[in-house]
Image (cartoon, rainbow, N blue to C red):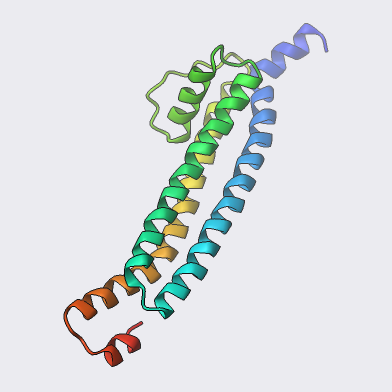
Length: 170
């Protein structure tokens, strides 16, 4: 490529679109795989715990699962940060991770420090974060059914409601 092709590609942020598209795919596949594991394990575990009438343990399982969901987002911020640093787009790993976190969460507390030709990457990182947060929210909403059921049954038990009525509650 000659210099005019490079400047057109840079002006159109083509490198940012290319790398952003690849990383978006990697992050979304990673996110989906981890969310599926967390949701599956939560559903199976809480189903068994509810059947065994271990209502307090359902709550613990819920909070541990929420922590795992949170850690998934931290891992994705690290993936973006490592990619930015690995492509030598930012000079320091810490700065790359901080920029990724600022952009991924759409908090925007950092300026756009990406070099020319890579500016669109910030938008793609933000899109991946927003999509991931929405996906996580949908999983958390589905998880609350068993959590609420256990919570209600636990309090029915504390109120001395008969076990026959508690067992019918869904």
